[in-house]
Length: 609
Image 1: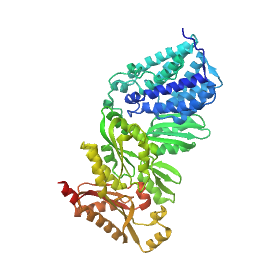
Image 2: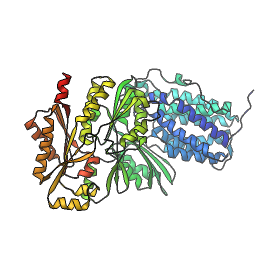
Image 3: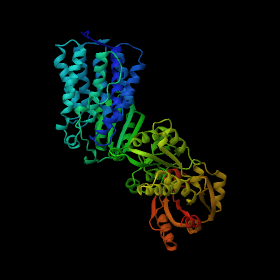
Image 4: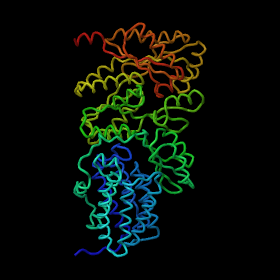
């Protein structure tokens, strides 16, 4: 006969939460697979597991054995580490639970039920548009059942076991409350994750052991056929955006009202001093601007949900090769989307403020600031964590990953990519390639790889080809003013002044190893443009089937002139034109443009015949 458990103290609560984190972590892949609401981006399991691991760390490091201190530590860790829609809801749930346990060293059945109901109320009030058939419904049914039974049952272990059964019953009904779940043949992923959380608590309270349960013990409650490919949930917004704000007297209600026009799936959780925001939006920059009015941004996160959905669907059948690059790669947005090219954004720095390139700030906005202000503007490589995040997301769905990046001589991006993949289960399947170029030159190499992937060529053949092809790509950049080279520190003030007096305009290129070298100087703008064009055409004539790409910094007329002139001399087919990446333009400046040329040397092409 088991001994009745009359209370939960801090130590027991701490260990039960650690058991919950283990359980959610164990089941995260299944949660990702059944994730279709609010958007089918396949990351609910990852987000819940990450949030619960943060919570577990907070519990482990709390020195107190009082449940109110431990619940406060858990609530703060949840707020700091919350990820995604489900993680934000859990963060608010634990905020409410901490409030219900405040001032208590331990809780009995009745006080635990009260705290649970307070937690559910807080979780619901954090969501701008709560929906039935989600994690909120299962939380509500579970907490209500606790309240009904707590007065007549002082054995917490028995009460929790009984309420878990109620939560599972509520979970099984979620497809009847949300049509998108029924169509996909799944239960709600967030609700399923909450049930796994409860399973961890019940298992520990029942056995006293923080162990891993048998995988699949709860899967009978999920409808067996998962039809993610058939889910047609409209994805109005592209970016899942989050931030953590620290300030004084943060009014969550007013903050929520300010953010409502920015998107949907809005959740605002936390306290008057620390608040986490989660929202689906097309303008992360606007969200962060509003958030900054209330305090300092401690962390920010932006995920591309369209890419995540593609990967989730692709995961139903293992794909062969994924392609990754960084945002210094200049290719049109529709080309990147059409070929499912994953882009890791570089970091733009403006007067000490950081922005993610092409996500938080578009190139045109960056260049308008460059043109109209004296703000200090630089770019820096993405952190290794950004690469790890994208590799974590795509590696399970592909046999291999080719990751092509800006020249190692120009940036530490290659090193960050290697670090991001190192010591991971998939590290031997991620192939990091130094393009030895940037901007349009990098774009042509990535385009070449994308087209060969779509032709289903073998991995080794593609890698061999792009390692050869990169040797013959050239980039010719026309720079109409020396001001920006001087401003970025690439040219001394004295040399810039002398060059300006002589009306000298440089043309720069990249060496075969990826270093910046000067190709020539021209006197006056007309000579600059004609000489740049002549370099590109002469080089293209030495290649078999040359390809061109043109980029510009607020100079579309010049880019179009280059294209039209190239067509007078050659018949190169499509010539891509796009905005230059800030990594190039911050140095070359407003009005600059570049022509990239790629192909195989005629002698090499003839040998292959």
